[in-house]
Each structure stands twice: as C-alpha cells, then as structure tokens.
Amino acid sequence: MAKSVKHLAVALQGGGAHGAFTWGVLDRLLEEENLYLDGFCGTSAGAMNAALLAYGLQKGGREEARNLLHQFWRTTSEYAAFSFLRPSVYDRLYGNGNMDFTIGYRMVEFFNMFLSPYLNPVDYNPLRDILLKMIDFDDLRACTVTKLFVCATNVRRGRVRVFGLPEMSIDALLASACLPYLYRAVTIDGEDYWDGGFMGNPPLFPLVDGTPCSDILLVQINPINVDTTPRSATEIKGRVNELSFNSSLMLEMRRFDLVDRLLSSGANPGGRFRKVFIHNINPEKIMQRYNLSSKLNADWAFLSTLRDHGRQYAEEWLNQHYDKIGLESTCNVREVFL
Image 1 (spheres, rainbow, N blue to C red):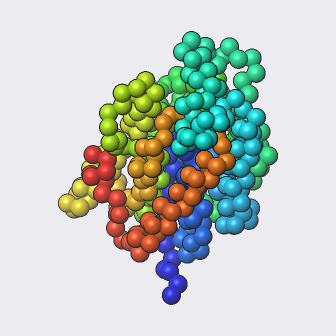
Image 2: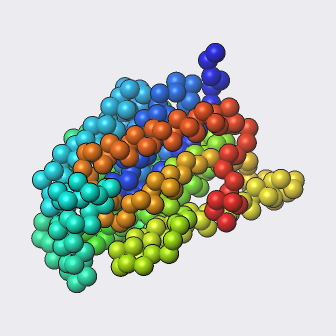
Image 3: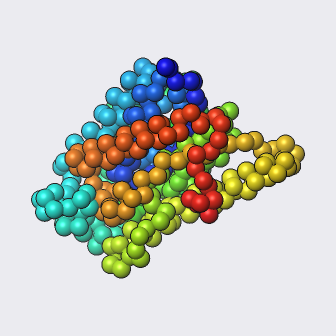
C-alpha cells in the first residue's frame, strides 16, 4: 500500500564533519517519493547539505540531489587526504573518529591560542573550490521546487542574518560555515560574517515565515545532554562548543512551546500565530562518543560511518512517525529542550 503524501520543512544543524550524519538522514528522506520537502534552513555543514539538496532537486530531482550530496562529502574527504588534519595511524587503529593523537590537530589547537587567521596571507578555504565546481548559483537562485534559507552571524552587530534564495551565493554558504579561529570573516555587502551557529543553529523561524508547511523536522548534531561532566581540557572545550551552539535553538524552542500553549488554550493574539508540528532526529547517544576534534575529521571511513548512522536514524523515524506528519508533533519540546 502506497504511503500518503506528506510535506516537511527541514532544519539542519551545523557541526563540521558531523554533518555527514545529516547527509545520511537526507539521503534516506529523498527515497520517500511521497514525502515532499518544502523548505530547508541550515547552518554551517547544514547549509552545505541544504544548498546541495535544493540545487539537485532543481536540476534533476531526487536522484540528482542524492548524487550531489555523495559527491560533496566524497570530494571533501579527498581534499582532506592531503591535509595535516587527517587522522594519525594510531587514531585510525584505536580511535572512534576522534583525532586525539593527530599532531596536525594539536598544532591547530596550540596556534589558535595566540595566532589570528588574519596573519595567514592566503586564507584559502577548499570549500570554495568544491562548491563552485558543484553548484551554479544562478540556477540555485532560480530554484522553484523548494525553499532554501542559510544563516550566518553578523560579527559587528551580533545578530543572525538569514540568506534566502534571491541572496544565495558562494559567500553566503562560506559565511555560514566560517569558524573565526580558522578563517577570516566573510564580507558580504560591507558586513563581516562568522559561522551561523553562534546565533542560530539552526533558526526555525525562516521555515515558519517562509513556507506554508505545518511540519518542521529538526536534524540535530550537537548533544543537549551528556552522561558525565567533562574533566579534561579537550572535553571541556568540546562541551562549551556544544552548549554555545545549542543555546539559540533552546531559546527558540521555548518560544515554540509558548505559542503552542497559547494556541491550545484558544488564544491567538491578532491571529499572528499558526500551528506548527515539531519533529526531531536526535543522535545524542552516538554523538556523545565524539569530541571536538572529530568535527574536523573528514576521513572517508568516518564520514561513511556517520552517513550510515544518519540513514538508520531516518529509517527508524520514518517507520515510527511518518503517518503522524501533518497531524501532531512527534517531538516533546518541553521534555527535550526546556
């Protein structure tokens, strides 16, 4: 029996190489022919995934979108094979995706303490070359099959900037993924931007305001809960990263809960609000295994493992919740986020 037609808007967190998990989720969702993906909002790696998927849908449909996502992550891994940030032999043999014994990563940590990326005369970001080879941004801006929103952080003004399709560019994507301790700020229209995760990881309001879809699926990467309090310097730094990159999402979810309670009580001041069903895929137990160093690990074996986990989580979510799309939230916002 064929599944009924459903519509989803999808919000994608950022998290460096951990975005390969999101790739796996999207790869599985694209196999559902009756599931229409009406819009995407992404940050950092989530922005890359979202842009490639939207471009693929526009150019050749679901299979083209799947192929582009695979090509992007494969090419990223190939570029990283020549990087000093590739995992050491010891990490490959005994690690779990972390680069605790990778000299290149320890060098980055050390130099980040006192060297600015503005001292680097080259300021080369391989993602620029990769994305320009894969995406014709004129065609992407003309996309009609889905909506696309990418967020970055305005450094000077301290607020989120959301780029929609008419504003989409290579600089918008690079701004969304600009980690300030690795790269110089990306300048767009005279303003400098850093990684969008500082102010929205990801923001959900563009999907509420910019699409008619009643359902939002949030694909998480950064754990909200951890089992133990970090003790080592590496663990502490990783947890601070997770907390800071989750903070804006936690606040936005509190607002969603408030609106939901207002609507449930029959109140809707000025008719400004509409019912939105929240769903989430949260690989918290898996992501707790990995520390901050793994977000820079683009080794193909590691990326493939994350992709496979993403496909598995998406499969389980579809089996459990597909029929509830359009009818109810499958994420208990108060329990998960408040």
